[in-house]
Image (cartoon, rainbow over all chains, first blue to last red; front, side):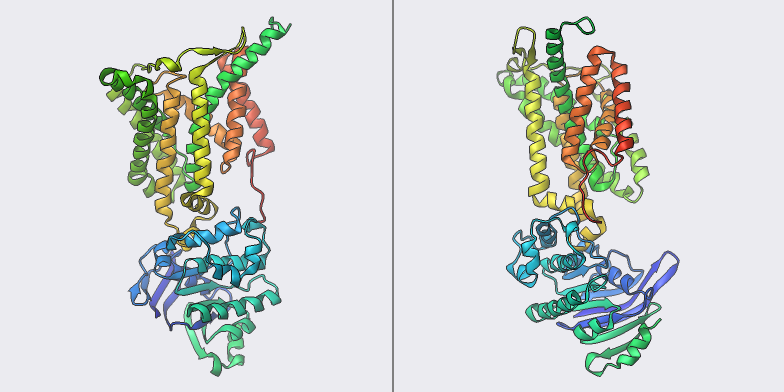
Length: 229
Length: 308
């Protein structure tokens, strides 16, 4: 359903991703783990297209989107929740979600989104920049869901967020998957979160995927070994 | 007694100069609106903005001529047609400029400065070739001429009132577009974070083109208004571009309200000082005040406060 073949990405002369291959089934949650600087964020950025890839194929239900600008990738069903949330700070919560609606042509925010994140309905008129970190994270996910995606890409959704909210986010992600049969690719460093949500775990090291395990057969110690500094 | 005027006279002078300042304010606001939305959205400083205004002024001149020659009975309403023509022609020229020139330079903001300055020279020469180097003025329909006598020593011009009403309407329309329309939503998102806007599905290139076109179109309307307070010549736009920059910077580049407030402050102090000193002294004093205030508030008059 979502296939990546031989993806190479470089910043100038230094190559960061070396031929990433990855294939994700419909409704599957895949976690990409790895230490800092191993290329996780670069992978996410090149998948959504804010960073150009040098070569390789990224296909969504058989359509190659690798050469398209990011807004067209969103139209093809990708959605992105970036590291650090990057919500539009001076715009209200409602307007932030509406920016995600642009590709769908709708203007009304679906009830489903507010029922997933009731706090956002309550703070509808506040400026996004004035929300707390956890609320901003929920807003960033809501904004991504507004574009009615088939594949949701999340870059370190737990960064800088208190443990109780991390649990909530895990619950919401699984709920969305149930609701929409959504495919989710999430990169993470917090192992407990990964073990909680993922069906499959990929380990990245130096721009390559070096290890892959199904959740039910996962060797926690081995994965923790990859994450240890 | 002050400067040799009685207090009654002084009151009238202040009111009338204040009113003259308001017409200048109108032109400033319309120019600055376009410049500010283009700068806010794309980080492009359009040095040719004055020429887009003059393009609008020439369109107004042409319309008045055509109406006089072919439709003299409709001359009374020509100005409304002229405004629409000015908006459309300047806007179309803006769209073409974005497509031919600006979009190739997005990652090089300093080069856009140079390129649009070059464009301004090209446009000036084009005006000179097409319309001649001499200044042209438009003839106003009779209902716009004359003035209202408010008191024995105060009178206000009807065309000035008209220009102000027009400015209010356009400013209101731009504010509505910015805060209520889908286009405005996208513009504000791009201003906030261009990369992320693309990643939520906004076609930033398309929004850039529309914004540039709209900004230039508004400059064209400013040109229509300009024909009432000055005569149109190929290089008249240059006189206004510096003041307009001043308005934008002083107001805070991303705030509509700031733009309006700073246009009001600058045009009023300019116009009032011009009466009591000379034109260049007025400019110097205004500039000094603005520089002083910007040293205290480098971000401009109005800034939105949010958590970073």
